[in-house]
Image (tube, rainbow, N blue to C red; front, side, top):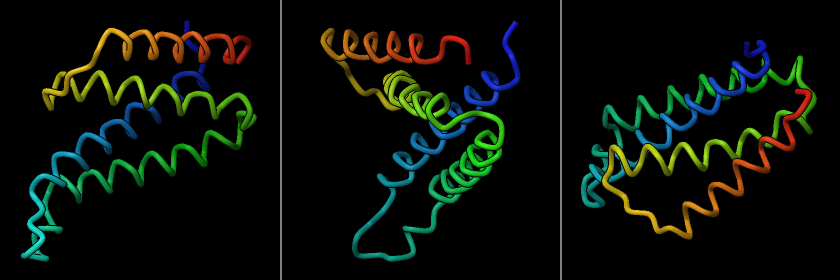
Amino acid sequence: MFDRNLLLLLAISLVTTGGHILFKKGAVLINSENISTWINPALILGLLFYGIGTLLWVFALRFIPLSKAYPFTFLTFILVTLFSTLFLGDRITPWYILGMGLILAGLVFTSIEL
C-alpha cells in the first residue's frame, strides 16, 4: 500500500499538471488586442490549481526531505505530456517516449525508501 508521503507527492503532481493543462487551454483564448481575454475561466482555474499545488507542496516539505520530494516534480513532465496528448491533441515521438521512460526510471531510483 502507498504511504501518505507518496500519495501526497502524487496529488501535488496531478494538481500541478491540471494547472498546466488549464493554462494552455486559457492561453489560446487570449487576444493580444483585448486585455479582458486574459481573464478567462481556464486561466483562473489554472491559477487555482497552481495555488493548491503550492500549498500542498509546502505542507509536504514539513514531512519529506527536499532531496526526496523534489524528484517528483519530474513526474509533472510526464503527466503534462500524457494529458496534453489526450486532451490537447499534442503529438510526441518515440524518442520523447523513451526520454520520459528514463525520467520515470530516475524517479523510481530516487524515491526508493521514500
